[in-house]
Every structure is written in C-alpha cells, then in structure tokens.
Image 1: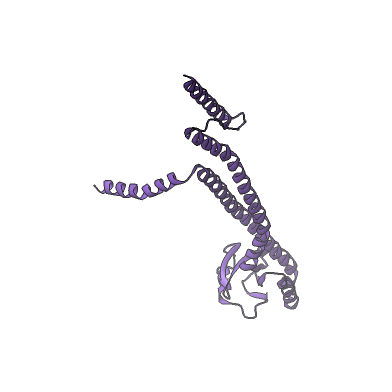
Image 2 (image 1 turned 90 degrees about the vertical axis):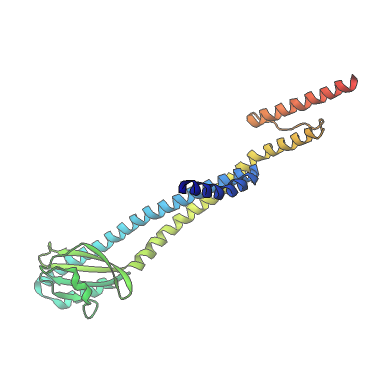
Amino acid sequence: MIQEQTLSKSQNLTKPLRAGWRRIGLKGKIIGGLVSGVVLFGLLVLAVVNYQMGRVLRAELDQRASEIATNLGDSAATHILRGNVLDLHALVTKYSLLKGIAYIFIKDGKGAVMAQNLGAVPPEFRESLTRNGQQQADRREFVFRGRKVYETHAPILEGRVGAVYVGIWADVVEEAIQRALLPLIGLIAVALVASLVFSIAVAQGIIRPVLRLKEMADKVSMGDLETPVGIESNDEIGELARSLDRMRASLKAAMVRLKRA
C-alpha cells in the first residue's frame, strides 16, 4: 500500500515535467539538448582539470617547501655542531624573507629550539616532536594565528643533529594555485562558449529544413499545390523533401484530371 502511494506521488510529480517537455518545439528540444550536453561536459572537464591540476600544483609547492627545509638543514648542520647560534638566527632570518613563509624554527637532536623567527615558541609547535625527539610526520596542517599553515619537516643529518621546520601560509599556496589555474580555466571557458555557438549553429542547420518541410506540408494541406519544396540535399531530409514534392505533384495532376473529367 505504501509502495503504491509512493509510486502514485512520483507519477504525479513527473506528469507536469512530461507535459512541459511535450509542449517544447523540436527546435527547443534539439538546441536545449545540445546546449545541456555541452554545458555538462564543460563543467565536468572544469571540475576534473581543477582537481587534477590542484593536486599537481599542491605537490609541487610541497616539494618546494621540502627543498627549502632541506637546503636550510644542510646549511644549518655545521652551525648546530659548532653551537653557533648567531649564525643560525641569521640563516633563519634570511630564509624567512621568502614569500609565503609563516615561520621557521630549528631544533637540535634533543628537541631544544636553537633558532626561530617567532620570538616566543608557540605551544602548538611542541607537538611536532615526540618525547624521543623524532618527527611524527613529514607534513602537517593546522591553524596558526588564525590562518591555516602547511608545515614541512626535514631532518638534519638523518635526525642525529636536529631538524628544520618550515611553515607556509595556506592562503599563499591557494593563491598560487588559483593564479596557475585561471588561464587554463579561461581557455576551457572560451572553448566551451565556442562549442555552444557551434552546437547552436549546427542545430539551426538541422532544424531549418525540417521547419521548411512542415511549412510546405501545411501549404499542401491548405490546397497550395504550386509552390515547390525547394530543399536540395542528399540526406534523409532531402529524401523527405523529394517525397513531399512528388506527393504535391501527384495531387496537382490528380486535381487536373478531376477537372477534365
């Protein structure tokens, strides 16, 4: 009983849609179908490109952050071994001037912070190390000062000497991704518009002779047997036009014979 009621409701909902679809002319159906297909395909392409390119660009940015951390670690190794804190701070200050860098800090093998550019070390950074001083993960994401940060870690001399932590502002990364994607998305959008224009032109070319056949059929039904169809093509529409022309000629000949009788 419940299934029958549900089926009845669904049928009642689809009836207006079917009735509205039937009221749309052939021209509207063909153009609407082509436009809908092109738009859906274009949106699908945009979504796939945005997702794939976003992944690739994010991976490249992660690689860049990892290279920064690795290079900084290589440069800092000697200073850590010598206990040269001033040179470490100078090195951190130099790298912190790079665009998008949120913070940099260097820890020794025991987990003590030797150099950083934040002043006081925020408590959330202490979670980056376990009790034995080993890194929990190469990368992590968290909110720092109200903004999302991508953090990359690089061990110094396989972690025996210490580790470097580089944080990059997530919004800077997202802006870089958007700047890289916008030209490609614009190109796809232009191609989509061109495809829409081409599809509408093709639909118009298909519909025009069909509407001409309808017009001629109406004229023949109203008694106009003098006007030829005037469609010359080698496709099915051309065959239909020639058949209508033969019917018109046959009716005209029959009317002439009837008048002579």
